[in-house]
Image 1 (cartoon, rainbow, N blue to C red):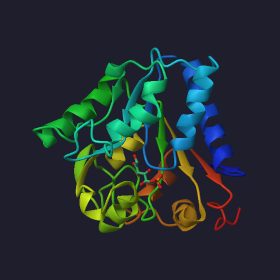
Image 2 (cartoon, protein in one colour):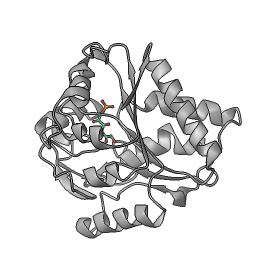
Image 3 (tube, rainbow, N blue to C red):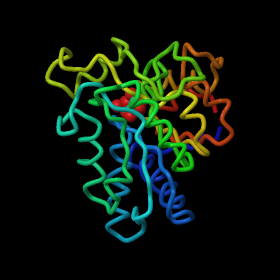
Length: 243
Ligand code: F6R
């Protein structure tokens, strides 16, 4: 694993934006895997900045998001569909029909999982997958105990994850109990992975991801087995790493 230590959150975001820009300029029809949450917000700001300067075009790019809550309509301001449009898609020239998220409001959720997984395959697979990490080691919404062989599936969210995400909702009661997420195997199929980590509260998770045993109890540990992972972490997040 390649670990890049950034001074701070802004530098972490800028480095990640540079990677994505290089990817898209080398392959204009790249397939990008995207994440939501607090961590990539700065990356999306940087991307919009670069787009406005004419440094990157999304005309031929396809994107797949990692996950979506179950039961929230697209226009619900807590849905990841809403987040992605507000923070990125509405500001760049991506085609609406090439910006995919799982539909957490689908009538048949099982069928939606199968459809999403095959859509990624049909697009040729993900060139670069952006990831954040949960305090419990989750990637996407793959909570501890998720089989490494998992494809896109429905998950029951851990109470700790619902608590961590409650900050975005009026109260914890409003946080959905389920989500659709790309599975661990779906994520591992990406040709390249960029994991962003920021803040001292993530330092222990990062240390465990890098040095801990590879175990389904800590889903992110599987990244040790991927051949092309770049971790971009700010100083606070690397405080527990010895190198
Ligand atoms: C979001 C996702 C999650 C987050 C993780 C960290 O699409 O898949 O795995 O990356 O929960 O969230 P933040 O960045 O809010 O700390």
